[in-house]
Length: 107
Image 1 (cartoon, rainbow, N blue to C red):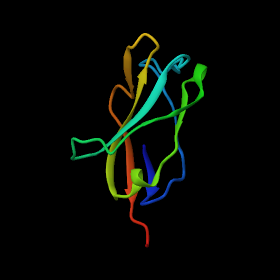
Image 2: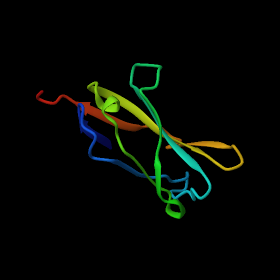
Image 3: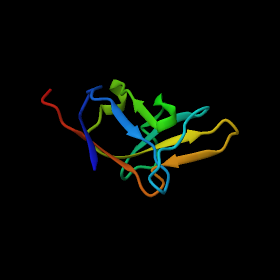
């Protein structure tokens, strides 16, 4: 399933529930979470920014876009990188990417 947003928009917010391989929500207490996003055929990151943890025990996070995140139309791959208090890093989803589609606006 893809997340669609128009070029230069900063809404809607990207909401996600991070789940483990068994489909259970990951406990995010004591962690930090970042959104990483790149164009499908690119190697450099367009977005590497902190997310807000909305409900730690239920794995809920949100990312609020800034204008520079959505200024170029195209297909993007995104993932959430969780850093645990001990320094371990885990990426969600671990079986692929979140598909982000930025479509043209009229102006």
